[in-house]
Image 1 (tube, helix red, strand yellow):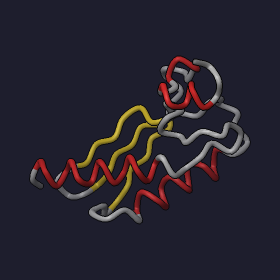
Image 2 (cartoon, rainbow, N blue to C red):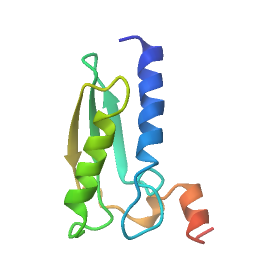
Image 3 (tube, helix red, strand yellow):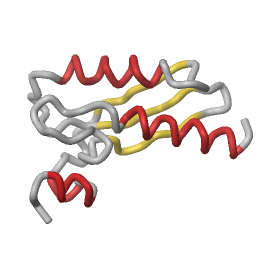
Length: 106
């Protein structure tokens, strides 16, 4: 896969992830800082490492399924490998400036 194709897919993925909102906070999961890593291999498999705002999030399963479903529906993606981690644990310092502004933290 060419670097330009990888960049195009990554840009689409960021857009898709910004369309998914945490059920308890009115901010998308990308700007919340829940996405730790995104990589795409030459077979068009997307690997995502993400976290949740809290390990005992009651909406965890639904949120993870939504991420998988929407990422798989992204042009150029053939498969998704999603890993959930709590290391490092999420905290509000991981919020993007846009999210901080939206939540009144700036």
